[in-house]
Each structure stands twice: as C-alpha cells, then as structure tokens.
Image (cartoon, rainbow, N blue to C red; front, side, top):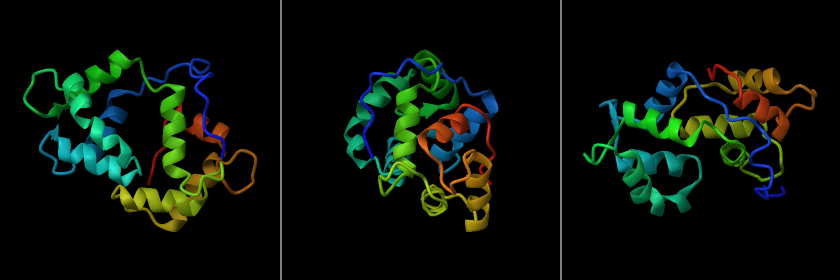
Length: 160
C-alpha cells in the first residue's frame, strides 16, 4: 500500500461528528467509565489500533487537551480539543484506514474489521463485520478501499 503523501490533506472538507458520536468515541477511550480519560486509557487505545509509536506523544497530547490541568481529559475537554482541530481531516481518515488495513494491501477485509473491533472491545460477530463491509462496499469487490472508507467515515455508520 502506498503511504499518504500529505499533499491532499485539505481536499476533503472536515467532518464534524455530532455530540452523540463524540460521546461514543470518548466512551471507547474511557474504559473504566469514570467520565475521564487517563493517560493509561489513551495509551491502551493506541496499542489496540496498532499505534504504539505514538505512546511517546501522550504527554504532549495531554498538555494540549487537559485544559483544567487535572491529569485527565473529560468529555468537555475532549470536545473542545476536537472542535479546535476543526473536525476529522483527511490525514485522520488515512490513519484510521491504516489501523484497519493490517496487511497494508490497500483494502480492508471483513477479517481486518473483525480483528480491530475485537481489540477495541466491540462485541461484533464475523457476520456483523461482513454486513458492515457490504454496507460500505459500493463497487462490490468484497473489501473496503480508501474511497469507500472515506465515504463511510464522513457519514454516520452504526458499528454493531
């Protein structure tokens, strides 16, 4: 798979998820459900999506996101930082695609969806994952390519 060159990062409009979508993402990070994200919870998500190399940046991320300085990111801070960043940009979508595309062949298979969702703690069956892929697979080749993934990421899709 060719890695993104970063030159087209402003071609797509930023996508602004609604509050309910933001809460779902926040809740994935907040694994102990105490209403705040700890550095350890943030690192666990990075590990689950195969971004271990970013763990060294967690301190910097918390410096920016932890607006009240309590060592945690609460939902209000999470939304505030996201709004400052202007939404989900093309590079974010490309990084998410790479997290799913574990074999780096430029396509996301049903099995890759199943494995990543399992690592993230989602209780989806392989049949659920097949349905997800079929719902997004507009060209009918049985996998999700970057264009299909981008379309999926810029509209609301129920995971399971």
